[in-house]
Amino acid sequence: MPLAGQTHVRIARPSRDLPAAGRFWVAGLGLTVLFRADAGREPGTHDLLMVGHPNASWHLELVHGGDHPTDPRPTDEDLLVLYFDGPVPEDTVDRLREHGGRRVASPNPYWNEWGVTIEDPDGYRPVLCRRGWSNS
Image 1 (cartoon, rainbow, N blue to C red):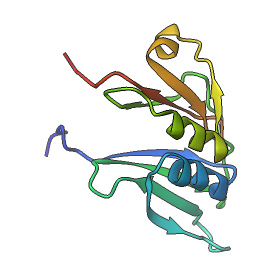
Image 2 (image 1 turned 180 degrees about the vertical axis):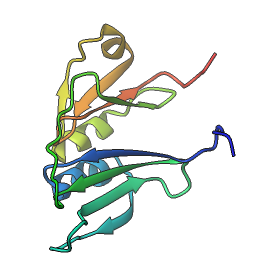
Image 3 (image 1 turned 90 degrees about the vertical axis):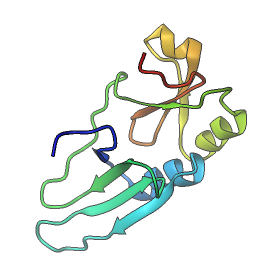
């Protein structure tokens, strides 16, 4: 089957601290925990937290530990842009900051004009964009 517009997308990232990441993405942004696994000491496994919206065609997977742990190494251009299609609520920005986020300026002036960039506890940057998504 060819890749289609409704193909499910998983964005996987390492995390230094899954509880901190969970607070940011769930309590801060309002995503839902879709799945959680604690690996313990089983070989070939890792701790896992999947967050998103239950009916969305995407989710964010955060992993920690395992046999080959990886430290997050985000750059200031590793963005996850969320299109609000209207003003970005200040209470959302405040909640993200209260739950481990840090508001930062983007090196790209476009995102400073059209959105708010928040760095998560692992250094990745969701952008809350007030524009709507259009692929035209």
